[in-house]
Length: 201
Image: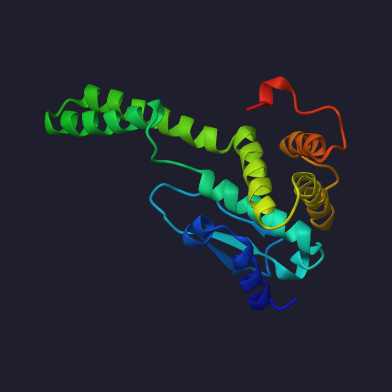
């Protein structure tokens, strides 16, 4: 597989928002088929690293859905959107600056602590199983605009998750992958049992 040719094809598969915020990078030395670092708030670049020697072992539909899921997850991470935790981070930072100006050590510690707790909560939410399930659902919706049916897209993503585990030499899927696979089986019509209610959006 010629990486540059495949990258051009994948760029056509990606939504416009994904092309604007992510970058596809060939990384033959990595052990993972596809990988991306958790995006930090101060870094706008969101590279997706692909080992094309392993990538070529997947079918084209599997590659499409795997990429769309990764792009959906990366673009779904929102550090700066109006909600309670972002408000607490901002308020804590402003209060911290005011306390520094007034040389109030206790005030600085309290404001900094509030900001840190809220920032940790934002990070945890974006790393949760729900964020992965949301990315799966978003990938399936984008795939439907690329000619796949909902059931086909779910089935291809399901088979891609299982194929990647084998390619990377994993003996079994992790807990989040098992939850995702069960949800995808239900969407694909392969199982009447969906995900537990506690994980449902």
